[in-house]
Length: 248
Image (tube, rainbow, N blue to C red):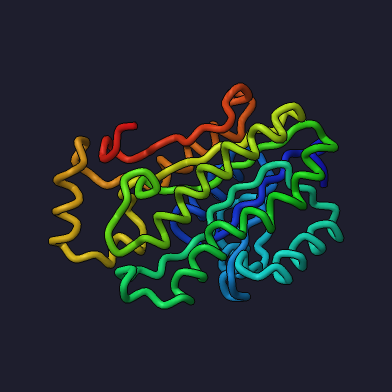
């Protein structure tokens, strides 16, 4: 399945939360969607959700922190003639700690998963986009990439790096009609934020002018716009979705 038949979107970290919302939105927009998860159970969950929702797509296992795992994903897509011209780099992890207490593996895990994964996925998929002379890449950053956040020096560094990577790659491939943008969510209602205490939620909400958490669908809507033809003249940008928590 190629772009000439139907546009194909690959979304990493699509088993839940923002990733699942993006996968579902792009599928409802008529794309064939491929979602990744780190386990067989996660990939089956993606597949089951797509089938139950009446969306054409597939779930695959891929650990974006592992080059061999990403290589297997790329080979599996090639074997099925699935050529994604849309890539959404959503997968990411946190390993929070104060820097003075942070273990080296806590630093490396976050940088490897959140930043090095962009290299692993963008490089091979850009070949198909270049041949088609059309492509869309959206990288998920975070509001903390601009604001900073204590206890998250590794995560903040990774999200700031994503935005820099986005700007650099946009300049490299723009002549091929390939756009590269980032989306930086703020305080979004997901499984991760539900784990916060009520006091933590109240403190955060007090800093948001709109006075509420964002919805995963609101992130998916912006991603859907950025990968559409309507956003063909937008590249190298970071779009903030945070209810006013941070105003660039």
